Image (cartoon, rainbow, N blue to C red):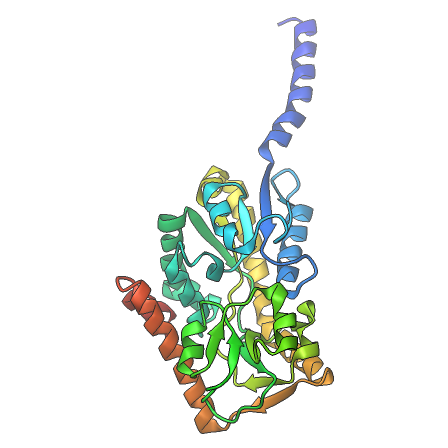
Length: 321
């Protein structure tokens, strides 16, 4: 090879190398079920920022929007079909595809426990088999739901109360003898104002994002269940990643799940903020509080047994108390 040919070859390689580096980077399209400024989008935003800052040349995430882009209950189908690669959502929103996902809310076990006891592997497999999804990470852990009301209660008997509900805790509200009503989140404020509902179920965090504190008088203690917000990824999109990209993404998952240790602290801060806004905590006595939590677990698992009888034993073994 003469000098001229060598020069041309080297020049070609210099041009090609940046192109090869650029081709190695993959960009994943993502969506969130929660508004940009809401509590349950904060952890996702941190994750995306860290991935994009540290993943240049390897992996990037492009967030195409929130619930205004894809309605929350349609996000599961969007992930399954590959319209988006990743979603910040909750299994509650795609329980029609993977009913067993409700066990992720019923459990009192931490994500660390579920990864070590086989629970994560079981739930991930169910998502892969039924919905073409990978359960990538859990972004909330240790935050409970609460009943918020405008009428005082003193026991685990909520008869006469009309409570805004969602499917995951509808059986529990029925076990309390309350009347569960389905009301869209955007309509809850007006429903409270007009007395259509006397209260609602919601996590310890997040009511200020919706302005509901203005129409809320009480928060019942104790809480129930374990709020589940997760990252789910299209299985084919996951399979297309190379080893370096998967290793990088797994590293970011480990980091974001480590932040769950602060969840209880965040809930305490939020409850203090609720108190300052005039929301009074109603502490059920020991007997009634125990009854309240017993009913929550009993009703939740009975409902899951009805919709997934073949899997409930395995789910209880990994996710149950």
